[in-house]
Amino acid sequence: MSYFDKFDQKKQHIGVFDGAWQASGKIVPVVSPIDGEAVAEVVTASSEDCHRVIASAHQAFLKWREVPAPERAEVVRQIGVELRAAKENIAALVTLEMGKTIGESRGEVQEMIDVCDFATGLGRQIGGLTLPSERRAHRLIEQWHPLGPAAVVTAFNFPVAVWSWNTALALVCGDPVIWKPSSNAPLSAIACTAIAAEVLTRSGYPSAVTSLVVGSGRDIGDTLISDPRVPLVSYTGSVPTGRHVGKIVQERFGRPLLELGGNNAVIVTPNADLVMAVQAVFFGAVGTSGQRCTTTRRLIVHQSVKDEILARLKTAYGQVSIGDPRDEAMLMGPLVDRKAVSNMQEALTTIQDQGGRILFGGEILDKQGGCYVTPCVVEATPNMRIVAEETFAPILYVIEYQGDVDTAIAINNDVPQGLSSAVFSNDIMEIERFLGATGSDCGLANVNTGTSGAEIGGAFGGEKETGGGRESGSDAWKAYMRRQTSVINASGNITLAQGIRFDVDA
Ligand code: NAD
Image 1 (cartoon, rainbow, N blue to C red):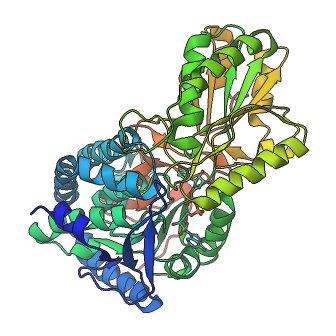
Image 2: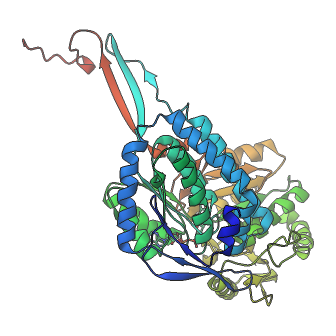
Image 3: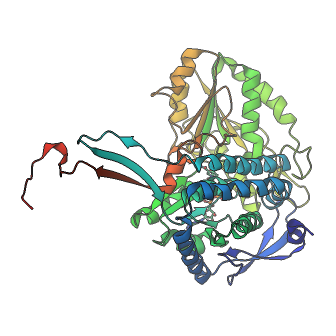
């Protein structure tokens, strides 16, 4: 019987791992948004469990930091191999727990595999610079050392990918990880931790390098982020909680890496390919039931093409199949829970109170007892207060602009968040305006492709209230290491920088 056969049959799981599976906190049910049924229960972490896990991770760090980086990378490579083998099983768990379609869940696991491959290569690249010294026979170098245990607090909507973005990099950099997953998705976290721990154990390393604490954000999350033995807190979630996390971590001079909410816009200019634009907006707004941080929430469309865009959007939205996300034919599954459904309904009321007009969608669907809704398109103006907020639901605001692309860019930038953005245009001048210093103020700015579905090779993250953190590709690894600048003097004399003389006979 395979690991997952046994896993699927178990009705109670332990939600704490620090080299051993042991938990003494509350027992909580795991409810699937597919049909509202409890699929299992999890023993969560008590406060004592959390302290014990932090201590174990610290002990693991003392050993892990001495393992050469290419050897650490080999462990990450093997974790990637195991994730490949378990792709279908993990995807099925993600879909069961949080309701994204099975195709999107497979894509999420593929991201995990890809980032392991990427991080494996990093094992031989995380070096520093050698810089010219102003002093004769001196060498000025930069080194990157392991930092310490990293808390990785994750959101429900990418329940496993975000852990892997952090963990693959952190492990190569020499940092153990303590994962606090979303309470909506503890089972996939337990399975991924077991996979990583098995690789560490069989390779002869402490398995507390990949630890886990399932528990409530307010209790366990706070304990974890407040502890000075955890120098890095990588937090993914909403802006209000991120603000709280940032303050606590900064207060103790820890390092917060914040990946918070977005309010992403697509600009469609008169020079756009409208078919491509609609296809991208459709995936961006409806994919993952509008529950991606990079979901397209605002469509800023030039007056001259608005009617055609709306007509094409209506045709596209008419084709969306909504239902059991395990059914390959579905494009949209449920929202994550009942609260998400009521939040969406409240937002739709507020939208209308503020002068917005629902063009289509926004109904609750009575299906299998699950949390199903129809995606919604709303005509809005940029000055409606709710347009500046992230409503984590499939609601797309259509906002008309007149004039040149700078007007549309100003609307794009006029929200507190700064994660993802896109322009659809075949005019090089408009594209350059959008990508230039006075263009989009977001961490991600795309041309003729949508706001969502980032590749792992680039650094991922956003500006302003999105938090400023960067994860995954490019040089995001630097956040997981401590930088040290060193001077080596081989001159045989003490020479001071800036030509200062301070001679003494000694
Ligand atoms: P959330 O803020 O409700 O929860 C996120 C995580 O924080 C959970 O694990 C939760 O238990 C934990 N938490 C809650 N209170 C805490 C506390 N006091 N201390 C420590 N941890 C605490 O978010 P969610 O509803 O799970 O996810 C949706 C949000 O996440 C959206 O705003 C979305 O945009 C954002 N998100 C951002 C990115 C990104 O990369 N920028 C990626 C995914 C999701």
